Image (cartoon, rainbow, N blue to C red):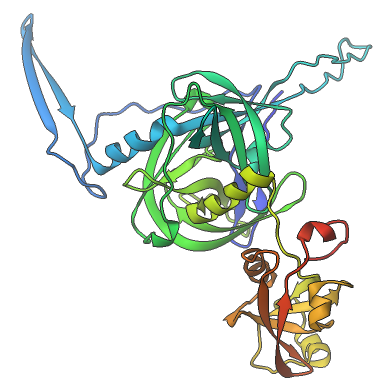
Length: 420
């Protein structure tokens, strides 16, 4: 039976979004492997030195055999050499599923306590601290795990401990013994990225049989808002780097690297087909920017989770409300076409204390326009508990501004639904 884990498509506004860890235990890889000649291209990267070409001609019978060796050193090969040894496969271990029938008439119970591989993804070692080394990967790669194994670049397998997870950004931190760790990766500055610059993806597409596979592309776009839900129904929201470097199931959690060999992102998802037409889509992968990653993993190392401030409102996008309701209930000027509608305000929350009311339409956070609840939530989650946030909103057709003191932890409202 095919026991695949995280290849279930999720609908987005742009298409069918897939997480791309790879399931194990069953299934036969079908298709054709095309073996062709060697092709040398210089567009997109620079040779550090001219390729060294050596030729040795020998005679075999009546035929002359010319053996040509090419030694190529480029920006790409240099970048890969700096980070490749820090890239690992992450194996999610779970209790094997029970077999439904042992014979045509008798059910068979599986009482085994042994864990078996359920899915695989990728990860990157980013820190070595005494006896421990730390790995960042995706939360969806380790979701549901009962145990974790790491396949290092040299083929060694080691046990891993889960340090912490954050479903919202789809990140997780693991810890292993540093004994076998010879290399750690360096993070780059994702805020300095330029559209069109080279991007290299490294990981384990289709699992560890293809560990440390490398694909090359470019940074296709920046600040792509990507939303998804995990298997537990929790929201994932990433302000992502878009790349056309080939990304496949199993690449989840692996690094996206620049030509300096720095990790600029953690690969997380891709659009596989159009939501509207079902047309297959190629070259639309998404990575969590490194600057976001470093902020989150620091909190996961320290606390095992991420503390986020709560506003205390239930939200609805203004464009989801009919024009008639906008006019009669919200009473906003006709010039206001986007914003976040307050459905209701939770009691004893920062929003209530600041004076927000039902049907207020929030249009700005700290002076910057927000069009929908995703953008408002993203701005909120960049704050720390104890920070202040200025909200601009319309009430009864009049624009107002209030300052909200973010004194409440989001976890305090987790049992109250809906809330933000």
